[in-house]
Length: 200
Ligand SMILES: [Fe+2]
Ligand SMILES: [Fe+2]
Image (cartoon, rainbow, N blue to C red; front, side, top):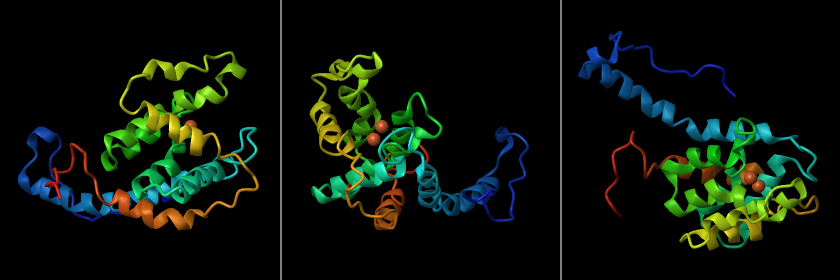
């Protein structure tokens, strides 16, 4: 991952935002596009941190991510779903106690409310398959019973996430998914920092 973010040499002149001018914000706004354009690269670099991270599982977390995404892709899921599947555990490095929240926050500007919900809640739904071995409640997902996306999240875990620990499964490599990640992260649809796009 790059240590420093390269940017233009022009700088705003204010020392407190309350003193900012249009000229200042033209400078900052002009450099934001270049920085935001590197988001997909930063996300992919962070995903690669999962390489070699086994944590006792049969395959490492990067391979689990690739297998989850590959299974979703081969099952005919759309590009936004596949990217969500690829990134659903990207928060494992920093969010050791809440990793689904990290991935959901990263994805939120770029995916539907349903895909965001699946990602954010997958921890509780995935727990159905192992929480009882850790003295936890495997039925934690029942707190969400009746929610419009309950079945979609249950299905994500059942078909793709809990099934993606097979060392013999032939997953696509990360390079296969890179163009999808770049396309999804080039188009924010829900952000307080981007103007709303007119409906297509
Ligand atoms: Fe997870
Ligand atoms: Fe997972």
